[in-house]
Length: 318
Image (tube, rainbow, N blue to C red; front, side, top):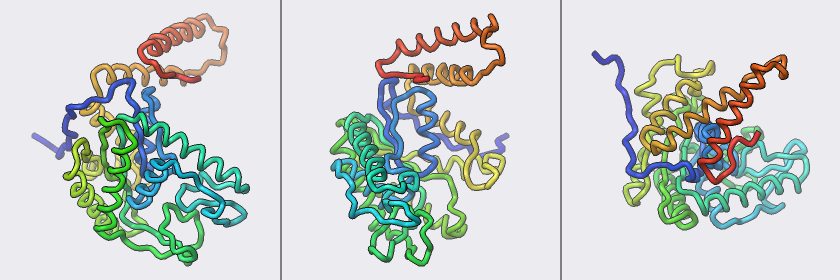
C-alpha cells in the first residue's frame, strides 16, 4: 500500500565526475544545493551576482558574465549612504563606490573564468514577477529595501520569459565547454507575499517557459525539484518555521535524489566520505591534549589526505 506519490528524477546518461565543475545561479534554493556541493568538496561557483530570482535578471547576469562586462560608476545608485547595483543582491552594497564596484567586478571575473571550464550549469528560477525602478525605467533583480513607491511590479510575459531563457542557453553554450549540460529547476520556495494564487501563476509560467525552450536544445534538462516538494514531500514537517522554505531534511532528500540520478559511483562515494569528514570536523573538545582526541585527529587527517589524493583540485581548506 502506497501512502504518497513519489517523484523521481530521471537517471542521466551523463554523470558528474569528481573533477567536474558545477556553476549554479538563481534563487536561494540554488545556494542551498551549491552549499552541499561544496560540503562534498566538488568544484562549484554559485551566484556571482548574489541571489537572483527571475529569468530576465538571470539572463542579464549570464550575459554580463559571458561578455566579462565590468560595471561602472554610472550604473550604480545611492540609497541610505550606500552604493547599490540594482542587478545585484544587497550583499554587494557598501558605503564606498570603489568597494561596491570591486566586489561586483571581482565576482564577475571569477564567474567568467569558472564558466569557461564548467561542465554543468544549474539554473533555479524563483518567480515570474519583476520590478521596474521608475526613476531609471530599469528592470531590476533586487529592490534593496528601497520604498515600494519607486517601483512598478508586474509579471514577465510569456515571450519575455522564453526569450530570456533562450538567450541564457545561447550564451552558456558559447562560453562553456562544448559538452556542458544545462539543468533547469524551479524553486520550491513559495513567494507567499505575492499571494498564493499569484505564486501558482508565477511558478506555472516558469515551468511552461522552461519546457518550451529546452525542447529546442540538446543537453538541456528540467529537474522536477518543485514537484518533489509540492507532490512528494507535501507536508509542513519538511518546511522551516516560516512554512515557506524547505528545511534541511527536504533539501537533503532532494540532493540525494539528484545525486542518485546524476553522480557517478565514484562521485557518490567521494561525497559520502567527505560528508562524514565534515561531521567529524565539527567535533570539539575541552582538552586538546587528551591522547584519545589526538588519536582521533590523526585518523581524521589521514582520511582527509586519502580524499585529497583522489582529486587534483584543493579540498578541505581548513
